[in-house]
Image (cartoon, rainbow, N blue to C red; front, side, top):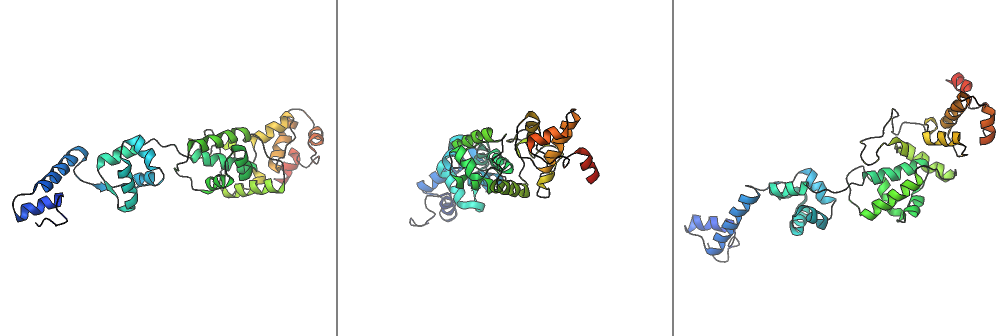
Length: 275
């Protein structure tokens, strides 16, 4: 093998030397020894990078992965660069899978739940101290593992804690936001026991795009009205509130007078007759 051969100093050069000359030069021999040692430590051969690891690489910064797994930043960069054709040693793939990367699914659900109440992305962004474009992008992305900065998660969580049990002033804009969220199937805050970990909203109600917003009862709204708050409510919530009010021994007229509702429109007998 000629000295200017591109295989010189590689494992392929070692094999070429043995075929042609019977003895490898020193650089090719060192390359062969390095490859043997790498195979002994990391496995016998490179294998294609699985899809879950590729997703992790695509959605996580190089430095974050390198810090958590011990894989070098250069190796991670090269795997990302090769995309679907990336190959790695089994040990490298196993180490990448040990990365404990927090998800943003709970963050997305928090934004959508607030939208379901009628809060706009601008209002959420103002309370969280984040750009409205960031809030909108999070709301509209798919439910998957995505990586964002911790400060963003914390700011949205704080905004959610402050806004999740109240509705915005009833205007055509807040109604439009709530109705759009309902059509998209976003679940309200009380549909979640654990908004970060639940695989889906809880309860018998189907949270999808097929429901009518006037047929859904937000338990928080009913309880607040019964406690004395004068807040907006849809027809189903008014019917349920009147039913509980009358069942407690009080008159429908007293509730309708306090809330400004039309007396008799939401009575239990009227609902049963309509059904």
